[in-house]
Picture 1 (cartoon, rainbow, N blue to C red):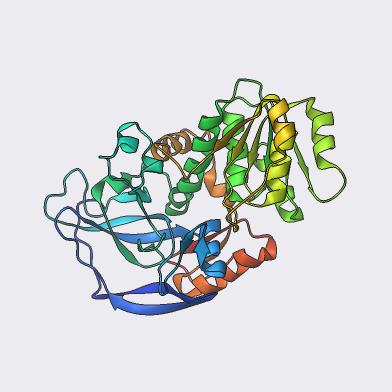
Picture 2: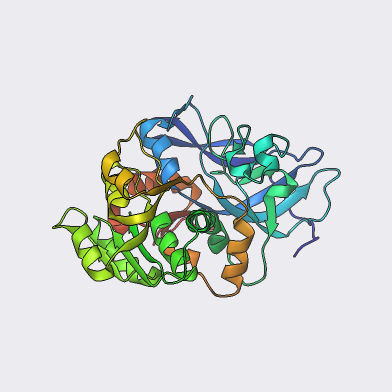
Length: 358
């Protein structure tokens, strides 16, 4: 119950990435909140594709890891202790977490583009410590109180839902828009759901993993195809007539090509995926002739709380992406499963209370 004292152990467990594809569970002192800080007991943390980049490649984009590092940026939990000067929150209160902490002072922040702040601190992006651990210190503005009826797992899934809402918002979909999504991972599925919510009349998806294609209809996808079997773009165009907006959510050259090529004249391609390489190429003359609008989407921006309101209203179900659950001690096993795309995994969730998988 909010406001009640909670027991805080002297030590806690942390899953640490000590090298490529090597995670160790260690015991460290539990931090105490200083002035203006909030200590949260973490209950659920989602594994993101960007975590897997760090795990397998030791980098994401041009950000190179210096081991050891703690990953994770999709948490939810309950407040364990408040530092001096923190108000508006209570011990025992259940919270979702905004993973980005922007400076709020630079011109970019003042223009409302906090996600592009050059000084942003983002959980699990070295040197910023992530949340694959039992307790973590946050700034109060990162803690978003959870309404009753939203589970910790659903709250942890709000972060990827916020990414999808941000991308669809950037696209400015018109009612009745015809949409294609290249990539059926967690963000791709939630982008489909967000596009439907925004008024899309038709949603197609390309995804090579059969188990993921089988789940696509649950997220509002009308047509799910293997991009490497036959001519998927032609089949989508035959079904839709023309694609108005395409979302690239795979982070590979082939998906960028498909998204930019399938969008019709005057259409839009939104690039969400993060490539493992530093450069991608474009079939520039085709894109120039049809005056394609290209938008690069980065993380989320002011969409975590709207996602929570939509979840509370029953308009979205971000928890539907969760297919596997692991304990903190099984973080290495979970990361390896996601890296290998094994067992039909879509979203793996670290659940602190359980050591069981499903």
